[in-house]
Amino acid sequence: MKTAIITGGAGFLGSHLCDKLLSEGMKVVCIDNLLTGNIENISHLFLNENFSFVKHDVTNFIHIPGKVEYILHFASPASPNDYLNYPIQTLKVGSLGTHKALGLAKEKGARFLLASTSEVYGDPLIHPQDENYWGNVNSVGPRGVYDEAKRFAESLTMAYHRYHGVDTRIVRIFNTFGPRMRLNDGRALPAFISQALKNEPLSVFGDGSQTRSFCYVDDMIEGIFSLLMSDEVYPVNIGNPEEISITGFAKEIIELTGSKSEIVSFPLPEDDPKVRQPDISKAKKVLGWEPKFTRREGLRLTIDAVINAKVTL
Ligand code: NAD
Image: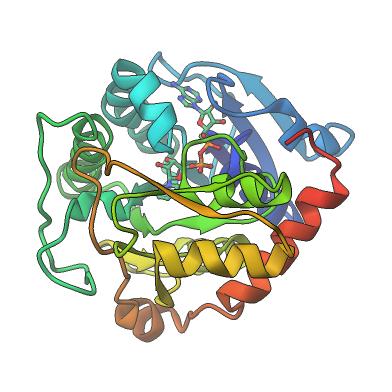
């Protein structure tokens, strides 16, 4: 039986990855310091003998006994609210945390997969964004803590690959949504769902013409797993290219929830990307992967999950 370590495994994506790798017949060790994660995301796994949880800050030395075949490094604050609240922790986990996780992969001879982000493209000057685009990031802006941490993490991953021969993968994750995402993390999608279900006004920043592309979590997890099992060392975009303006999206959420909410405008935050859409040609060609859920299908499943979980909105 193979063993996988997932850092950030108690978070939104990490917990879905724990489920996926267990279902693929692996042992899973989840390492998380619960900075932005939630133990509830993995509590259903505690009786599974192939699952274990270690509460640990991965910016410190990581020791896990025994054989390890895969290390998936997902630990990092990920939403604007989180990385603006924890700017130093974000830089530390992208740099020191990635260093410690790569060191462990080298020691164990394990394959390493880095969770990178579409934010490495910054406020992009080409559209849609493919993997050859180098990005347009403001290193000294407030969002720079996240974007630069991930750019450094990619660079360190390639250095460990080239210099130490570690078998590495890099996934550039575009906006993902689904059950277990936090409703108050500052992103448009959870905020709109929460506001619409309460019949409160939906807050659109700027004139609402900026675009986003949202990927349903089940598609994202399949894409990440395909990359993990592939031979591709260079970064691969995983996301859903179905693009929509923020105003169009707010209207869609109002329609899908049957809400009485109106739309109100607020000033655009600093360095907010104006467009965002993945070019997934490489994922299609190299991994044979493409998303199966439309945004509307994913939204229906997510809204149902929010209502059925009877969460306090
Ligand atoms: P999340 O906040 O739900 O999960 C991140 C997890 O990392 C949390 O459980 C948190 O407690 C843990 N963590 C943070 N710092 C840590 C540390 N020093 N030591 C140990 N654990 C630590 O976020 P998510 O949305 O699941 O994102 C997971 C990964 O995917 C992140 O690396 C993020 O940058 C990347 N990503 C996510 C998205 C998305 O749309 N959700 C988009 C692009 C990239």
